[in-house]
Image (cartoon, rainbow, N blue to C red):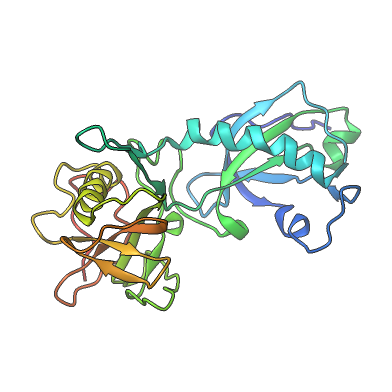
Length: 274
């Protein structure tokens, strides 16, 4: 009987064991062990839950592994995933020698290390593969390879809200009608930064996220900055300055319109407005 070897980079994952729920359980002790995750691979032309980023053919993971050891091993997987998905340049330098503003992209990737299944182990196969995919193994269509640089981000990985709910926005599916998409967020320290500077940094970052020199698409998208820490509120120049808070860079659909797709990587494609 022919037993399959390790997958290759770019292979799509149809189903996959999720170790993160077990690891996240309260009281998980250092000596607790988990089953080393496995995956089933198949066609990329169907809903998938992840993609193989890299493979270590020299690895020989045990069928059971300490949770802390697995977490340590998974650190390198997260770094490998950045090279696979690409990244949005996060730093916007401020004028007049001021500090740069560093945006954290609002994309929800999850990385998981998997190994051989029991049949492969019995056949003497040993390797580990780094998988990038969705939280909770949510199926998606499309590919994550270079999604943040030249590709198209599947809507499951965006961060969308039905409205600007200043009491605490709720997540909405990005492929369903929604009024707001979170593009990125940043943490401001004790040095005050004017709303004008933050708005400028948000616009520059948005142009990178949307891959368009005009991220407003001639006014069809409105960019706002949201002070989401102290008293959550949209901040418009000349209000401010802001300090010791978290600020979100958001895109909203004006005039009562709604988006029905993520704006990340939109480029010059038609704007997903309803």
